[in-house]
Length: 135
Image (cartoon, rainbow, N blue to C red; front, side, top):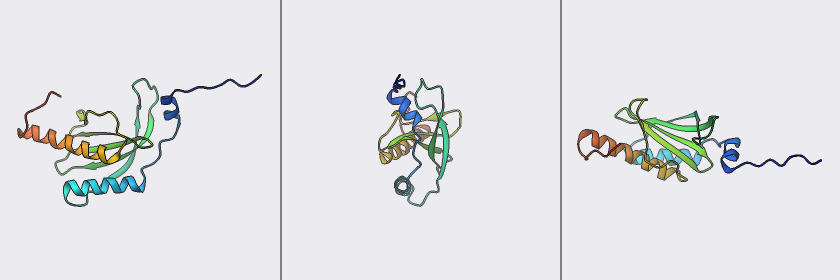
């Protein structure tokens, strides 16, 4: 009798595989992007977070995270959710987290730039420099 054939869909395979750590290249991308935005070196931290990769997942998956804090007190997070897969959010208060409107990026530079732009737009709306969008 042969052993049973196990089949997994893409999401199950992704969740079962360990998500790789942040690489030196990814760190360079973040350092360069932040220096371009702020005109100086911006300290950031590397951490881990337990993330539900898909709404149907019951288990949380540990993901590497890049975190920094903006000059105005805004917190920024980029989650590495797979090989060349990134998610992002920013917040001023932990109960009100915001993002870019894109669930996942396959390019870290695009993710970081979109996150910084979304936060800049939000800050401008709060100051009254831009008309508020429905959030």
